[in-house]
Length: 81
Image (cartoon, rainbow, N blue to C red; front, side, top):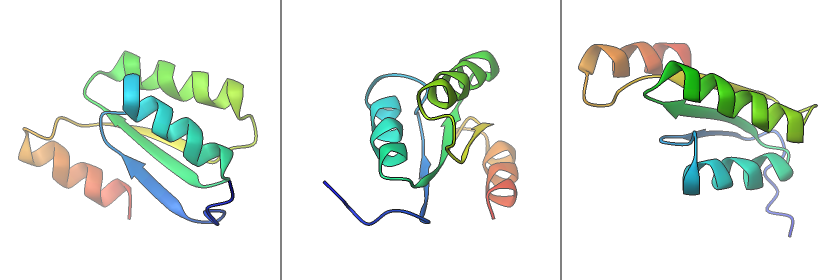
């Protein structure tokens, strides 16, 4: 299925595992640029590595932020602009 997402950017919260990770995989398969987010630094780095192994030419980045902490959300917003 071609969702015409090539060149689009997607941010996925809670995407280091489970449904969020699967969504990232599907968006990458559609050639979208993907930004994943998790609260744990190691899990976020590992998720980026796994996705890059599966999609070596993908544009993907990972940002660690806990949405329960205002300052982390503000930093995340600044980094993703």
